[in-house]
Amino acid sequence: MHIFTKELRFTDVNSALLVPRHALELFPVPEGDHSMQSEAVDTTGFVWRFQLSTRSTGRHPKPVLLRSLWHPFVVEKGLHLGDRVTLFLEYDQENGIQYRVRAQRKTIRLMGYDHWVDVEDLNSSNLQLSSFELQYQFSLAKV
Image (cartoon, rainbow, N blue to C red):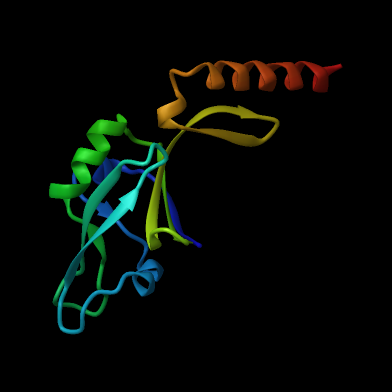
């Protein structure tokens, strides 16, 4: 189940990830608490720990993934302004319910559509093939 996709802004890359408020319903923050830790598995199978926190005052909770656990993910993935992160909730027979996280970068805009690639694939031959296929499709469209 898709929780949210977000294109990263300055604050997301350099501080805490601002989480869309609607996503809060899919995080089991204990009654009376304003934070919780969770784990998310990335596309390589690595497990990341994140700390979701909401502010304790004010009318709106303003959820964020705190920098202390979010920033290592940003650094490891080489994320920067304009990249995007997607968070999913999945169920599998072996592990039960778990969060999945995916980091992507826009590689090309073709015929009005953005093409996004997992950051782990940026140096792989899959990306080169994918870019070649996109260029080929573009050249066919011009004919």
